[in-house]
Amino acid sequence: MEVFEEKKGNIFKILSEAISEGIVIVNEKQEIVTSNEAADSMFGYEAKELLGKSINLLIPTEYRHSHTEQVEDYLEKSGPRQMGHGRDLYGQRKDGSVFPVEAGLNPFEIYGSKYVMALVTDISIRKTQEKEIIELNLLLEQKIGERTKELQQTIKELKEEVSKRKEAEHKIMESLRKERELNELKTKFLSLVSHEFKTPLSGILTSATLVGKYIDTDQQDKREKHLKTIQNKVKYLNNILNDFLSIERMESGKATYKFDTFPLSKVVNEVIYNANMLLKEGQRINYPQNIDDISLNFDEKILELSLTNLINNAIKYSSGHTVIDVVVIPKKDSISIKIIDEGMGIPEKEQKFIFNRYFRAENALLDQGTGIGLNIVKGHLESLGGTITFESEEGKGSTFTITFPTKNNTN
Image 1 (spheres, one colour):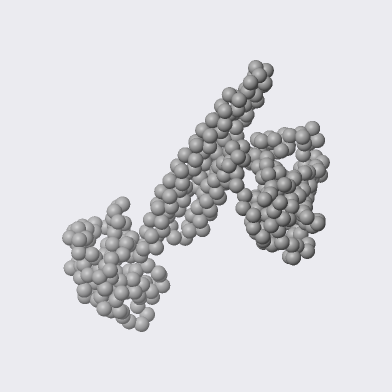
Image 2 (cartoon, rainbow, N blue to C red):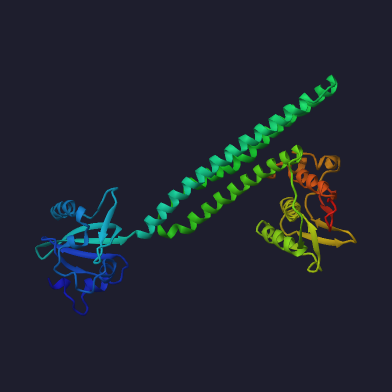
């Protein structure tokens, strides 16, 4: 048919070569009368190589019978339609390899002859991404299950510790006082766990649901955004569990420390680098001066934990467009590090409780947190011969100072 012939100015060729989808047109005998460059490339054929060939050449053997019946049916009916209707469709390249496709069939008639135009799209990348998303969701569900088991074990260990302390009380009045305190702690702990886990778990569920809705190739950025949200919230839950386990180890006397010699700048650089990712708009951290030549013999992980807790708190409890200063003060046998912020500060009447476990100041109750970070830092530092102190004024900011020996004196 002249309308499909390779001639200069042929309107079909001009239009078909301008789109990225593959176009294949067959006649009533299901013979290919023309195809565009995208279709030839998709199926691995040279230009014009498909002309006169049966459309079955492009279809895997196991699908050819049903496909022939479909095309015959489409030739009898008018109007475009989508192939498959929920089933997976596949094409076959010249080299015999099979790949997933989407195909729309459009029957039409020219000069008394009937034809079907197939618009074919290679969806290999999309199918691979869908498989990866399914596998990732399964992995996340498994991790959430594991974290939940760890939390249950932590709660069990805490309850056992409470029971042991009650049994150790010899005096009736002291026993009654301890019991009241423990009941209050239990209520606060359960409330804390409920709040701190409910919010991130809801976020994980929402993001996991939304990820499954973004199935198109051009929605990858949206998928990545929700996957990042899931990763961050799982990491947050894991950090809470580690804090609870750290408390249990300290109270049971199972905490162990490892002393190494390392440059102070190594830990400071890493902590500030990670903290920069949490900064609010306009916030910045002033790096300490003249620390490149300072080496310590201390527990590197405990120093990192302490600085991370204090700097992250400074970021959390300060508004945007404020400065956080990190100041290092070397001394003869020890070193002090100050974290100075311009945040909300701590009310004076509540400052005496600031290192108590699960304590949250009234002006910070709406901010996310467990109230055990400072308690853990204080416990570790004091076990290693160090101290933590602070000065604060509500509405103006806080200065936290940790001081610890530069050499291991615990041997």
